Length: 233
Image (cartoon, rainbow, N blue to C red):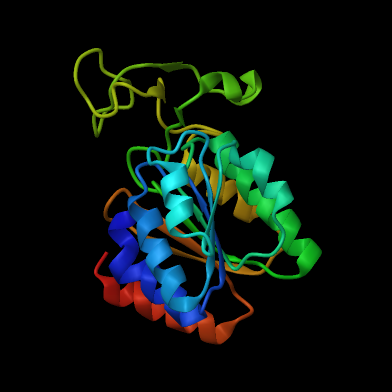
């Protein structure tokens, strides 16, 4: 997500004057730091959700006491507790079950409050568009968990490889494609069933970015289309 900050995410946040932001999946905090810079400038608040963030949470919350709240629990435990937000950035557990259910929880809140937030989703192109990744396989119900192994991924090859490849330390689905497999598949399945008016924008570089935008806001849609078209991504 960090690689889309300057050309897509930041301009959209500024355009919408977002005040309440949720980040799912903070990792090292690279994009979290970007978001906090925005929050300081715009007097906004960031809620970061990550079971095991790779930065010192106390240090960061002490540095940004008015702008940062961190939850170190899974997103599906925390999202039902959060109600009022303008933007959600999803870059956490890259599998169908997690992403599909995160989107459904966001939809549930949107229907309750009659307000669909902007939603950014990373890793919507290869390698995880059509292949599940599990940071914690045991957290995914068995009926939604693809057969997986701790092996690498090679572009153009559906099967995992025994030696080398990308993300060989992760738990990856044995094969790509098929039902309920991958981040983009989760997005497409969600959009097929949602009753909320929306439009989907895509960027294809840096493993892909999708943005779900309320389609009833024509001015916003036009602005975001221009940002995506002019980003070169």
